[in-house]
Amino acid sequence: MPRPAESAMEATIHRPAWKTLLAFAIIYFVWGSTFLAIRVGVREVPPFLLAAMRFLIAGVVLCGWTISHGERSPNRRQWASVSLLAILVFVFDYGLVFWAEQRVPSGIAAVMLATIPAFMALSEIIFLRTQRLTVRLALALLIGIGGVAALVSRSLNLGGAPIDRVGALALIVASISWSVASALARKLTLPPSKVMSSGAQMLAGGVFLALAAAALGEFRNFHPTTVSRAAWLSLLYMIVAGSIIGFTAYVWLIHHESPTKVGTYAYVNPVVAVLVGYFLGGEALGLRTILGALFVLISVVVITMTPAKKPAAALSAADAAACHSELTARRAL
Image 1 (cartoon, rainbow, N blue to C red):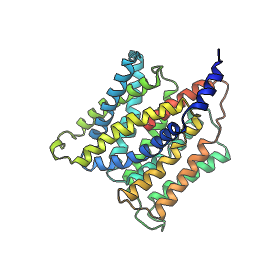
Image 2: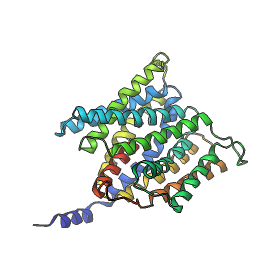
Image 3: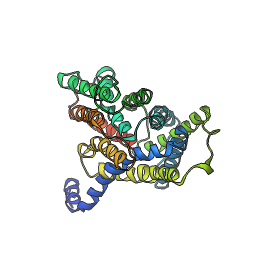
Image 4: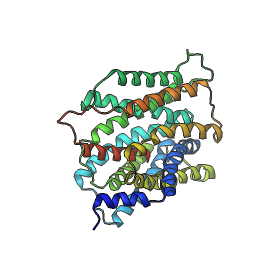
């Protein structure tokens, strides 16, 4: 009888290469292109309402699929944790991203969100104590700040108009909210199934986004019959391609490839978003955008490649890896 390690090695050897390439292509290009889909949608549909529709439908599909395959729905304590993360991730992160894309080009929004590892590093240094502020990390953080400054500064003569400051601020708040959720997720009681946990958070997030939309009066300004086919197709693309197909490809990859390889989507998505916005969305691609994106991506690469200085009392390596996997999945959805 073959040993588990031998079986895994044999499965790896005989796994068709085209499946791996296709899965990577999906998380690289589909997730990168959803930023333009958001921008197309928010031109006609109020932002929090659009986000609510996306995540309510995707959450129902994922939760229904996992329950039909024998998974238990979250208990009361898990729902409390799910709800807290849903507010931080889907209302204050995604909700602000959808809102900001009314004012900020889709490619720039993706670049701004690429600063999330910088805020996560800061939270690990200040709150979790799993990282030390080394010279390398300090330089990476400064480079990332320089990239953001290049995008928003009105004093630098880089050509092209700087991005809207209110929109940029909303994206920074969104990134901070995500980093706070990442820190809390390590301490909260969540469903053991990562698919159920992500699906439940999407479902709860969709409900909270709908409540936010109602509080902001977005339902009064929404008339479905006046929405164009392009906007409805953008929503369909976000739900089917971005959330369901993209999440399926991600889950498959995380079980067949190393987390380091799968995590490379964080570097590729902003580049794809900028190029898709330029070629398909008519967004500007000047020196300001190129420099800002380059600085932010250099910062992201350095930060994510820096090993954690984990104290003995911190999470085990297995727990940390599982937490990272779940957080990455939520960010991608």
